Image (tube, rainbow, N blue to C red; front, side):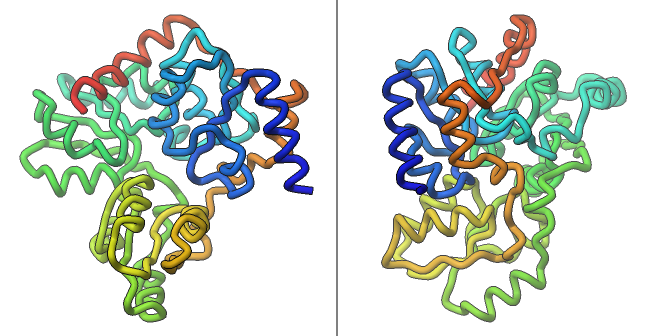
Length: 303
């Protein structure tokens, strides 16, 4: 049944000229039918360069918005309209305006995992892999970092010469990983390296052999001469790595590290959206696109 739907999807996307974008946290059956797989910003860049007029995002809303911001003339569809991101949505534009009033003259650094509305109020965006280098390059030493307190804390620790104000937000799934879970995983797999995403808490990242973005974690595991790894990010990465590196072994740090919003998108959602019976087209007004693109362009310039 899964194979049959995949074949229908491949047929439909070719007939309709649709490019399927899948975030790395999507299930294996969705990754297998995607044209591009990666993190949110990488997918947006690939979409901007790809010779397609329509893109189907298998991910969450802010990712589809970012594709639209970088490719305003193209049609962008979110496969499942209910797929949001708690971290991206936990800070409102009004709250950010209040923060800016409280700390006048501070540069606002926004994790790419933010809504288009928030991006319109920011100075520069960062990804988990570029945050350190971009914050270091900023002329302004006074910074408001939103919304992830854990990624922000990691940046603040690594760049102590900057005065960084943090917002108490973050990814509920990564932040829920505990030191106890890491200790148990290391005891079960004593020869495994622990690779962790900086959205995890500081006490967890302090136990890691490698701290980096999802793409960084995957690249590290693939190129390492070691054979066992405990993965401290969404559990789909364990599955993808096991498929791609069958000679190595990968273990989840926690069975609870599952993003329900990413898993909201099903293979049938993709099929339904391609048939024109599901999904939601992402529509942003010209002003929002223009203002939200500025911090992304600044990220590209600095990164």
